Picture (cartoon, rainbow, N blue to C red):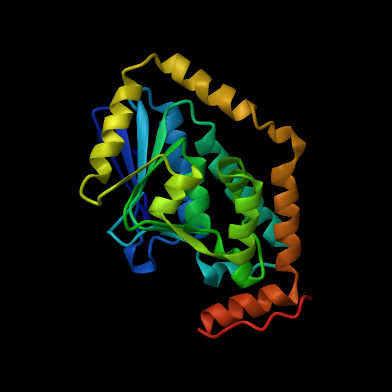
Length: 260
């Protein structure tokens, strides 16, 4: 198994536990971590001993509390498109994985963290978990598939509200909305994930993989929703509002957006 700087990987009886391990940054996704997630899932695809994946974050505060804003602040309209497309490719790799992937959401799942959880096949959340797509506060939009997957999971109206307001929802509300499958105590989180995973890995692997393919096919990504998202994310990265939003975040002040 390859060496990772920001992930912890442990195979327990064919179930691979992948932990995003940047606790001093609330497990925020930087470019290196996204690349490592890609490499880890390539191992999942290639390793016949891996039957399923449980993905979580280190500590008890955050699953993944967004992206690395200091990196995002450096984006422009050109590299912003590539940034979004790279993340979309990695998260699509998770979504299309022929082996079951369960997100054990143990705290904040915001921005890229919410997008990462939504790319997984099943989500189980601890009671303290919080979900949201607050990118609008930075003058941008979700760029790793969030505009598409949130709409698929909670419906158009609620997705519009959550992305346009940037509001967070509790684990309990996330379950009501269909964003998560189960809510547990923190102590029971991994046990519940294992319970579900053990049921799945006892089934025929080929059939499980085909279920993934068939369910994903219902949404027909050929309609270019993800490309529209990448194009729009890129345009946001060229705007003055984006510069103001990221600067305000890093300077810990309220942004003054002007719509330009």
